[in-house]
Length: 202
Image (cartoon, rainbow, N blue to C red; front, side, top):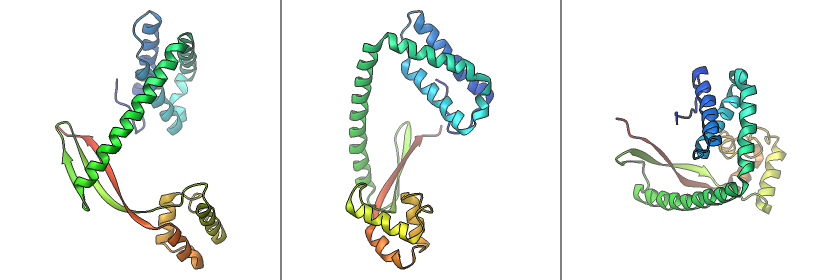
């Protein structure tokens, strides 16, 4: 499959995704194995593109609507397979998340307190410690008290209704006046580790 894009796509790339979806659905209708994951991913990429630049898909809206309806019809015709597929994918994700967490914990232990870059044969990753605030869990009494304190300062919108990163910046900027210390105590600082991975160049 063509690379998905975090950045905006060109008209040619958009057309390639649309044509690829149409081709996959036509092949499936003709009895060939269905590349469901590929079709779903291409639809996702186009949805992201639409959210970023709605007008960039103007020339394809009608065709994409038709293809989406065709996709749903094909899935409806094979509903038992869809149910089984969903269960398998959900189980694979659960197992992958467990493996990812185990590997993450190992890499954090290996990196220790400092920054470390590790290389594999095809990829490399960086483990970086950073300071972050721990917020009380949603739905708890401490969380409700924290929200009340912030609202009393008039800074609720500034922290985007308790965005962790914006709250951390607001505390650094000491915007909460006489409530500053109480709010900081309810959000203690802890060390977390960020892990980023990328394909090795070359």
